[in-house]
Length: 118
Length: 113
Image (cartoon, rainbow over all chains, first blue to last red; front, side, top):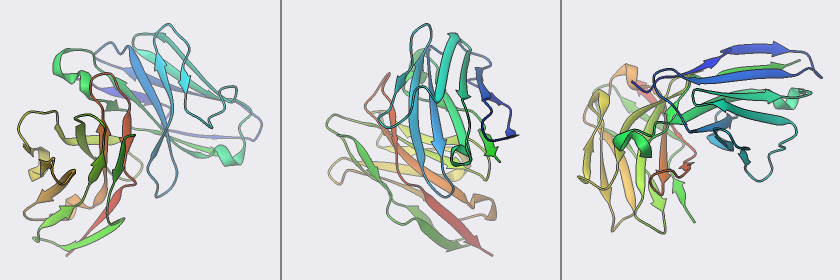
């Protein structure tokens, strides 16, 4: 249990276009999801915390108008990179918190999405 | 403030040798601690976690870690390295239920045949 999927796994887009990445909790309801960005050979940088039915909380330095996060249901959060530029190219990973029992202190990670902006 | 320090961004061991990956944390309250493994172009997989129960935690794939409060450490070990253990390893700290994770900078493990 506690499986998280991401779609797409890879996406290539032209500069100036927008890209939507989906994060789904497949076998549990996630009241909280997290979005991370990972640069090559680097650690995960938390971008924002997404709570179902409310606005996302963005970390300092993350442009909320550029990285739109929507958590419309208990199993789906989306990250939209608007007007993407080459510097937005990165590996984006989502995670979800399973509120059941002793799993509440864990985060379950998706497989990641590789975004390449040409 | 909470933080995690992983000493050694790259560690190389021979196949069959002991694996030791170091993690020290800073936390104002008793922490929850985690080790994750990441293979290329994949997400993070939980190896093990410490959540204030037993200080010696056993995880998957033969890994274990010991929580030492006096040393603020949570080092990851495996008695005998396999080629399949080559990956990136991340240590993370959380303040507890509902709180965000703080990740270390990662340690890349290379296993030499």
